[in-house]
Length: 159
Length: 316
Image (cartoon, rainbow over all chains, first blue to last red; front, top):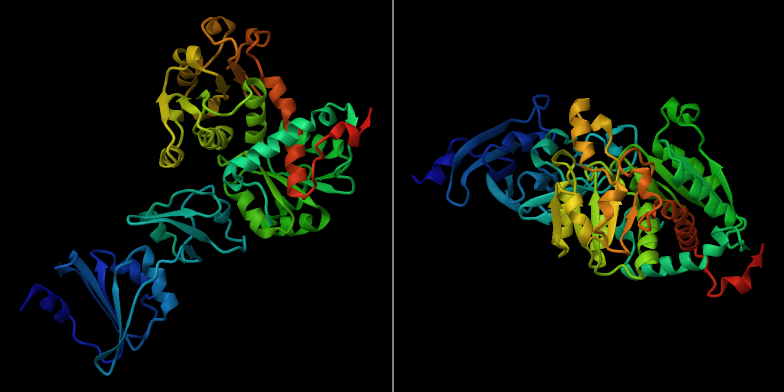
């Protein structure tokens, strides 16, 4: 059995739901946070972290049962897992493959990390807007204060 | 709505056109000519933190052009202390005025206001961010002295980390092909992201801690104030601040046409002995704030400045 096959079999196949593969190693918990998946939901969620991957060296895999993630939800993942592959599973088969799109602007996904930015006042109603200045490596800047975002800190500021 | 939030909002051609119009408006700013180009217009001055020159020059500029001004007044007595959001404040003032000048302690506040408003917003300083109307008057002053903005050796000195005037100015200078040298203490260096932006735009940027060594080659020395509160103790401040002071005796090797600028207020960084030298330009610079802001308000409000202002206006 190859390393990759072994990785996939660490958790059983799901009947219905969403599989997110090729998440950068160690980022699965951030992905769950970005999708709003926490202990408060009833769907079974399987998670494997730091398994071998030919393409990436190491990767994480997430399987969310009985929930088909929407494109809007998946696009939020562009901040931490822009190259993840996503499959919608129905009756144990891949019914649909989806891509994560990194738009030119990331809107209302995370709050600017700069402590003196006007958007730190949570009462201010305008959307939180982070412009994608560069895609590889990813560089984001706040539309308002212009500060380059520290991506690690940004994960903590995800809504 | 178009506004002026950073210098990126203006092309080089627009900058030159604004400076040309500012020059035409000099007799109006001096009170020698009455030219009510902005009659019936109201400027909202929203200064959420203290300002002397910026607020007064905006007010003077609007009144010299026949318009009127309403002020936010002291923030301590406004709705802001009751917890009103910037968005709500802007919605209100938007309804009262035709154009807004704003200073705010939070970075990004001007862009936020611009996204919230229907009338043009002019950024008069947002935290340690940008101060583009100051940049316009700085460029006007430099061009007035040297007849051009291109290819000059400009030294920006002092607090380059927190000094928002030098952030906006450095962007603009490099766009006109100036050679820019940043002279600052190590702890107050120009922020990395600004240097990265300038280099990405193809500018050659030099950094040094030696201000005095730059004087002989400079066409412009732009001083800024080093603030005590940026240092952990008084001794450290004194040691650093002493290296960023100009005295008339330091200027013996300066080029004859070199000018010294400062956004003011100055404290000790320019000795009064410099005031009477041919190099001192900071008080004219402060006056130029009026013409630069007149020109800008006309442009943002879609009002043309006539080619021959003397024939259009009324000599006072």
